[in-house]
Length: 285
Image (cartoon, rainbow, N blue to C red; front, side, top):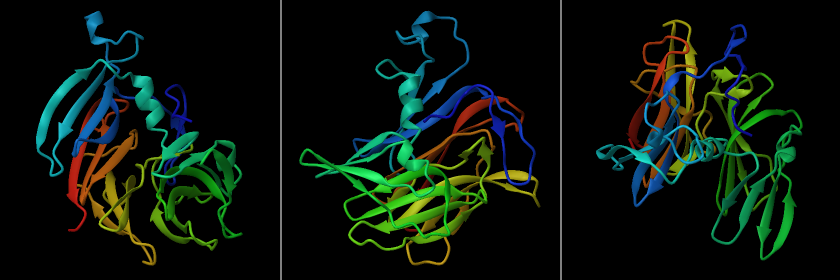
């Protein structure tokens, strides 16, 4: 399930629904780790004069930038011919109908299993597929699963509940017991989609970047939250970067270094002209 780019509704904490339109410019970044560095892929929806700016499928042109783990620009913006905008959009869906390949198994999240209020998943191992339930507390009903991190021993979901609060849920895959959980906060929304990145693990903590509207300062803020299961609440860092509700966030980790990327109309105009914003943080600091 990818975010529709036609008419949707904007919903963020205590505001009315409005029509939605993407800004013009660089959009939908996808942060990947390549050769020990951060590669940020994104596409541009502005019209170009030359047909060679577009790939053979006619989709919007895709670009890539490469940064070192500490944020040094290694590869300036360059056109990519071997990837199209649809591939980026599908990758940014993060969970629905995705396969996560682990060393000895494949974990799958089907759309129907995520729509029943108490998500579950499939595991494929040695040619056998098994359905794995998750021990959800009876009082918790999931509204929308935003992202999943999974390894051999644990599974972490970021999801909104019916009060539209983004929460993190940590399951021990070796035990059938209720999850540890923490409330991240009330994010911005585009329809049902919370303004939040995928979950990553670094320095033995789980990280998610998300957008919040600060009603006192009357501005949007991008927040980087980290949480260790067992802690009462996440630790927050407000990024010193422009922010906007009309965005898509992506994040990756190289060892203890984090890269957050999102698109933003930096002037605050709607829908405005968009550029890719990047932020780099040391997960141990």
